[in-house]
Amino acid sequence: MKHLIAILFMFTIAPLWGYSQKSTTPDSTGLPGDHFSLEGALEMLRNAVDLEAFEKALNTEANGVNNLDLNQDGDVDYVLVEHRLDGEAHAIVLRAVVSASESQDLAMIGIEKNGAESAVLQIIGDQEVYGDDWIVEPLDEKAVGGKGGPAAPSEMVGVVVNVWSWSCVRNVYGSGNHYWISPFEWGYYPFWRKAWRARLWRAHQSQCFLFQPGYGIVLTNRVHRSQTIYSPFRRTSPHVRTHYKQVHAEHHIATSGKKNDAERTGPSTGKGTVQNNVVKTKKSPTQLVDSGNEVRSKKSSVTKKKVEASKAKARK
Image (cartoon, rainbow, N blue to C red; front, side, top):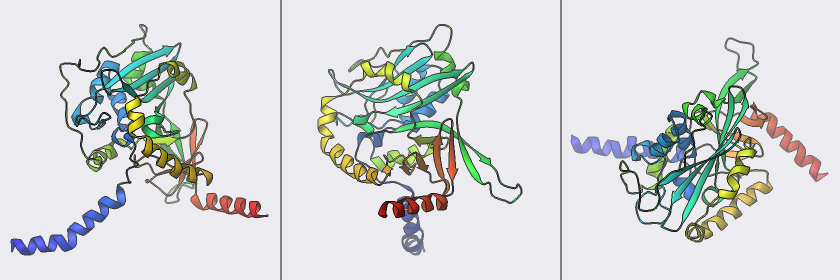
């Protein structure tokens, strides 16, 4: 009887499970960013009381955000958090310790106040780790239009989230401007840190999917002042640059070809593709178009007609 059940599983349930896994899991880009979740980092920041707690969350295995092994020693790299500010613009740098003499920036979280109790936040992946133009921000969706009842709304609007309610954001804007530069370095880590072995990419990605709701990939940069603050302090690792040189070259060729068609496929965060200022998500067949503080979604059929009309005009 047990053998019969095993055979039935192999020929019925198992193939379906494998298909489901394959169809919902995007392919790896081969870039190191595949092993660090930008959405996960924002989720840790949202739940952190302050930047010290945020650093601890990033370096806790159970949270599943960090799976980076940039120096290929088998252990996941420790990530430092460094805070820079100028007035009401803040730059929070995430930096991996590669060796005693090298470190590599992973991303910069920019926070800029745009009202008495309002602030915008984005995380921008470093080029050496994610390739070009990889920006993630908190998003919420609301329906606009429609006739009510069973009628579908005419469009969905993705609203940029006001992050003032996040405890950590209010903390950095506190009266004392709570400043944090990690005191740790290569070989000197906090007592609570427990090193763990890097996992396979697919195992890591299965946990990263949990972070994706509530965040979206966009091409509009809303934190220019934060980037200006950060630029003089950016660090890159020669070891990382050399090790991933070929992967970057192949990735650049692949994405450049798509950019010529006004399309870019980003790293494997499960968010789909970016076309110009359009984010095509897995949640629906609509397209989210970034415009100011709103991300408006248009029906794909309308966009398709515009593309076809443009091509016809170009042929003439």
